[in-house]
Image (cartoon, rainbow, N blue to C red; front, side, top):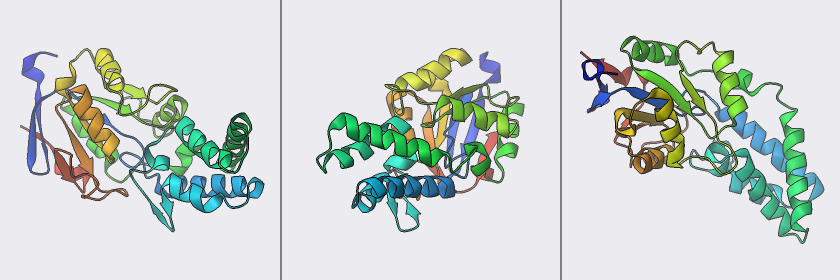
Length: 251
């Protein structure tokens, strides 16, 4: 893009100048995923407890689940599937199982838990106002992307399920060895956009999004508190907002 197309965005009380692209987190930012993740974590823990009695309670805590609350910075909310499997396997190994056996048990339980949900995208609807926000950004010639801790397949399916193909130019999920807050993820998106990281703004709901923006040299990170995150957890973000209407294109 040329300099005549650079855009100013007002996010809450903070203004970001010369923005060419906005990168969104998915779960907890675009998608209302709290109920899905809570049910998934509980199912995984119950399945493993049936094989290894006594691991359910510590696993729930490790996942970031306490009663009905999901920790937005916890393992289940921001960790990849691989990271969650390894953590579960570690708790199993503490009971005396060999590591390979523990890892196989964790993977098997995770696969069985997946059967509870035929399609994750169906269980994680867009938050209200998201299509309007994405449309406003696109009309301002801002390129839009997603960088998520979810798998590439789930990220692509989410875009397809909610018919966002015309709005989302880049949709990136995490893979083994490459997950948030690795700056390579943002650099990958920027290469596709043909812009530099300094011209991108990251919008997310967890400390990993904030760290991604900082480590990759983005223009900044806007923390969103319309999901399960609070202002305390997002205190290091450049701005914190509670409604998508607080993101405005400045004429």
